[in-house]
Length: 246
Length: 150
Length: 59
Image (cartoon, rainbow over all chains, first blue to last red; front, side, top):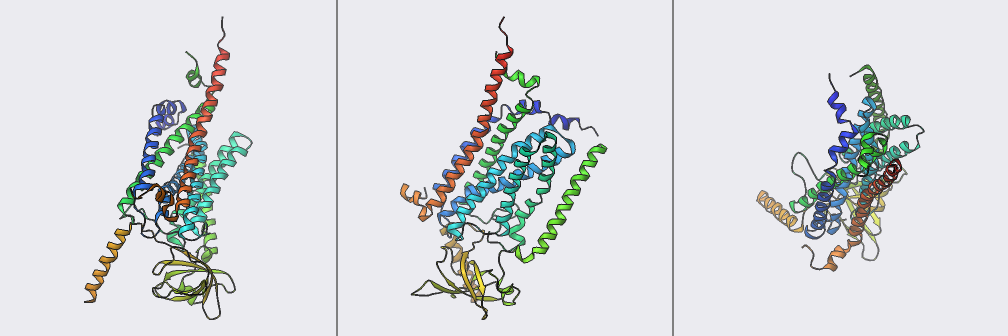
């Protein structure tokens, strides 16, 4: 089987040039959507019949939790591809995705804790959902630490990849924890199949916020990946050609 | 896929399989410890560890809340639809604590089978809606019940 | 607008400190995610400008 197209996809030079014109528009669009979503959620959406105004944290808690999990899935896929095919670009993605994912995981945990205090009556419980999210944060930090501490480049890449792929088992545990066990955290509100259990006046700003967050993620990911490509490929002609003054 | 790629694939799959087995065994071993709380049925059937602080969870039975007038003591009953447990609690209740909604209580079960709670948490479901929608829903339910009872 | 006044929006029915602190922390983390790579980019550009200027020899 001819996989040369696959290897082209993994070319740093191709990726860099292909993304150059996308970065600014995505950034601006994500900022605009986020401002609209926040204003909508904070000032225009109605209060919840039960939780009152504290539920407005949903507009940041849910998108960041989704992102924390999605980013880890991408990490696991990249790690898998890197470990088997050693595509350079996947390793660059690994390095760039980890800090972003860690920050959103931390955000989900912190906003969740703040939301928990007025609603549940506590900042934290060791139920399956919260515990598995905390484990996710530790996985992220472990991956980041692993990369920095390993002695040679080779060891860092491969050990990291295995840790990442193996940690992916945590993702379905997080998702199904509220169904499999008795947890304080309630079950899913947003459903892919069937009706979501949230009123439309609240659902729409939530969906917009999710879109805004994901766009923002793509924006900052591109910034990091492009930086890392420049740093890794600094000795090549195509990188140097970017900086020769006219 | 070259032989080298296939070899690496096997290594990864081996590790994933190994971890899956390890975690499944760990979860089976922990069993009830992974559950955040015991149900009233489990408490009534004494399927709980003795002399240990445990958590119980259930729906607060409507009409069962008795608040003391001169202290912070509250008595209520939690139920899972099959069995119920009487709870005694001394302290401030969370805002969302109300009848017909779920609650998690932390404490001990005494010899009379009463749950002496040191902490009470409120649990809420996955439904979000404005006040008006909730009132409309409750009214609709009331009308349906009236029709059924006719 | 759901709220009648700026005061009620800041207070959020006693939940104000929870909601606003969450949004504040969010802003910090989003800003960090943006500024961190931008700073690295500037460093790269500075370094490359220095390197390029070194290799260009005036006659």
